[in-house]
Length: 395
Image (cartoon, rainbow, N blue to C red):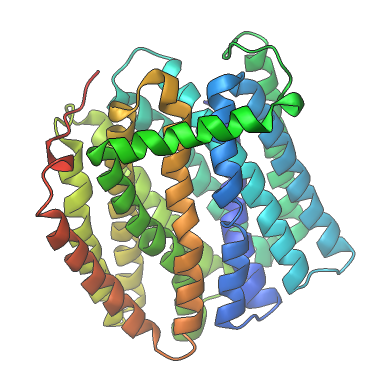
C-alpha cells in the first residue's frame, strides 16, 4: 500500500502538469492537446495486453518494480526537458507516451497483487486499494497545483523522489513474496507463447456474454469518463473560466475527491450483491453531470459538479472492477484485468482526439450535451440485456 500510494502521488502530479504544460506553457490549441493526451493513452493498446500475460506468468511484484523504475526515469526526463528548454509538442508527446507505457505495464500486475494479498472480499480489497490510491493522488494534484508559486522543477523533483521511494518499497516487498511459477527472466519471454496467452484472454471474453457486455460498458466509460474529460476540462478551465494553475489544480483535486468519496462509501457499505446495477445506473448520473455542465454553471457550481462527476466515475469503476474480479478465474485474472484496462485506456484516446477536434467546430457546451445524451442511450440499450444485470458478487 505504501508503494501503491507513492506511485499514485506521482501520477497525480503528472496528470495536472501534463495538461497545464500543454495549455499554459505551450499554449497548444485543442486538437494538439488531444494528441498529447492520446499519446499518453495509446501505449495501452499494446503494452497492456503483454503486461497482463506477464502478470500471469511471472512475479507480479518484480514486474511492478520494473514499471516503477521506468516511471521514475520518465519524471526525471521531464526535468531535463525543462532545464534544457527543449519542451515542445513532440517532446511532450514522447514524455506522455513513455509514462503511458510504464503505467500500462504496472496496472495488470497491481490488480493481480491486490487480489492475492489478503482474504477479504473483493469489494473490500478494491475499495481499500482505491482509497489509498486516490488519497495520495489527490495530494499529488494539490502539490502540482502550486507549480505557479514554487516552479515546475521543484514539483517534478518531489514527484521523482516519491516515485523512487515507491520503487524501493516494491523491491523490499519483492524479496519476501514469490508470485509466478516460471524462473525465466522477463527479457527471454517467448513471443509465440505470449501471443497465445493473449489470444486465450480474448477467447474467454468472446465466450462469456457477461464479460463481453462489461467490456462494452468499459469502452463507453473510456471514451467519456476518461478521454472526453482529460481534454474538455482543461479547455473549459482555460477558455471559459480563465483559471490559473492553482484553480485548475483544485478542479482536478475536486474530481479525485469525488472518486475518493465513492470508495469510502463503498468501503463501509455492506457487500453489493449485484454490482452491475450500480455500474449501469451510473450512466444516468453521468447524463445529469453532462447536462449541468452544458449550462455553464458558476465557478462554485463547477467545482461541485466535478466532485459529483468524480464520484460517479469512482462508483462506476469500482463496480466494474468487482464484476471483472468476480467473473475472472485465477489462471486468467491477469489477462482479463489487462483487457479491462486495455479497453478503458484503449478507447480513451478516441475520446480525447474526438473531443479535441470537435471543439474546433462545436462549443464545449455542445460536447457536454453529447455526453449527456449518449449516456442515456447506452443505459437504455443495456436495459434489454439480462446477463450482466444478474452477476452476483462472490467472496
